[in-house]
Image 1 (cartoon, one colour):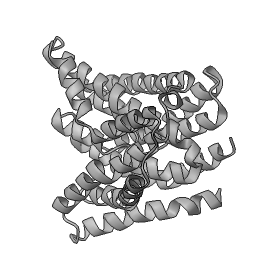
Image 2 (cartoon, helix red, strand yellow; image 1 turned 60 degrees about the vertical axis):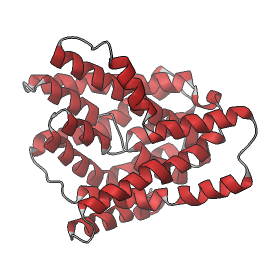
Image 3 (cartoon, rainbow, N blue to C red; image 1 turned 180 degrees about the horizontal axis):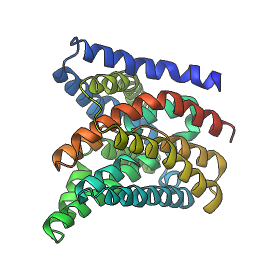
Length: 309
């Protein structure tokens, strides 16, 4: 346990460094935005392409694992929405709170952290979680919130969702990597060296950007924020463990990666959705901050546990 905690410290140390730089004004919001864009469109995409190019579609299409993760996410989603409705929250607020409870920072934090601590064998499950988060639940959120506001689903919505998915560089990088893998050609040495060099920038830059993006966030409505952080850091991995290990009997190592991914703090892109739809952005911002801080203690515990699988 102590060994795992010490291994995670450099990752969270980089987040802390970014937070200090942002909080002290040395790294202004404009700089954070451009660093995030570099990671999102270049460094992380190169890393994901490299991972996917060494996999096959079959490696990702683990039906039991996908079903277990979807079941756990759906259970947490419904529970958190029910609690929000009990507090008489608006539909938009209930939706974004449910989204907070299941969408972890898999791209910027999970990919580098889990692959390093759980090994290369964790890559297929990490990419599976990332795919489900980016495609299934982002689309679900958009459909439900559109339906609740307009009273109907726009006939053009499917096209808009496809365009949004196609514009996401992480999804594109994974799709292109799998497509290249399907050719059976292998990645040329020169291209592989380029991808490795660019992808190596993803980990430090992504973690620094996470910290810098937290610098201007404040905690309001602590009771709700604490509940949402509990939902993300405790309920989500707990129900994922139940679904993977008991209900669907997922292979233990794969189950461990799913559980560890579920234990990650709330992702920054949830705030973008909240801001776009005016659905409690301050509350989401505070939840990202609190869940990230608390995850310094909770993530090593979960990873130490699943490492024994």
